[in-house]
Amino acid sequence: MSDFLSKLKGIFIVQSPAEGQTAEATPAKTEATTKPVVTTPKAEVVTPTGKVSDKFYEILFGAMETNNQPGFDYLEYKKSLQTLAKMPMDEATRYSSAYAAAQAMGVSSQALNDSAQFYLNVLKTEDSKFQESVNAQRQKQIGSKEKAIADLDATIKAKGEQIAKLTQEIAAHQEDMGKMKAEISEAVVKIETTLSDFHATYSDLIGQIGQDVENMKKYLK
Image 1 (cartoon, helix red, strand yellow):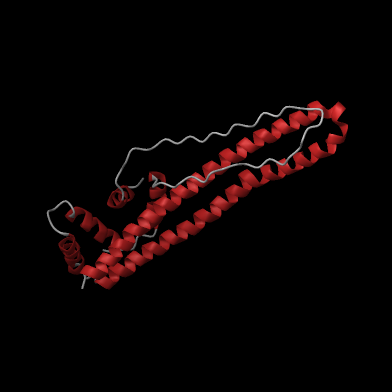
Image 2 (cartoon, one colour):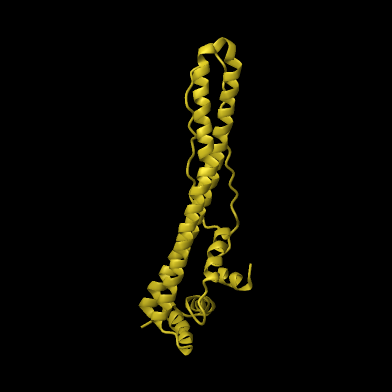
C-alpha cells in the first residue's frame, strides 16, 4: 500500500479487531430404498449481514488514490479536519479552520463540495464494477453446479425404472448431489458475505463523505 493510501485510509477508518466467521454446509445423507423418492435439491442459504472491511476500504481508497485530483481538494481538506479533531474545538470551528487553510490555497467551498462529489462518483463506479464481478462469479461458481444438479436429477428419475439393478448407482448420484449442494451453500455464503461486506464498507464511506458535504454546506459560508 502506498504511503498516500495509508494516510488516506487513516482519514476515514477506525481499526477494530476482525471477527472470524465460518460458514459450513453438510450434505444430507441419502439412503437407498426399494422405491426411492427423487426430489430436486435446493441449496438453503441465509444471506449474511455485511460489515465494514479493511480489505474493501483499501480497494475503495485505491480507486480514490488513482483518481486523486491535483492540488488541495476534498482529501486534503478531510486530512485537515482529522488533524484538528485532536484539538479542543467544536465541529463548526474545526470545519471553518480547515476551510481557512483551503482558502489560503485559493480553494472555495464550492470547489471542496465539487471535489467531494467527484470522489462519490468514483466510488459509485467502483460499486458498479464490483457488482459486475460478483455476478460473473455467481455464474461461474454456482450456475454450472445448479445445471449439473438438474442433469443428475433427470438421470436419477430415468434410472428409477431399473431400481433393482441401479439402486447403488442412484445412491451414488444422490451423494454427488449432496456434495454439490454443500458446495453451492459454501460458494453462495462466501460471495454474498463478500458483497455484503463491500456494500457495508461502501455505505459507511459514502455516509462519511455525505456528512462532510452536508457540514461543509452548513459551515462553509
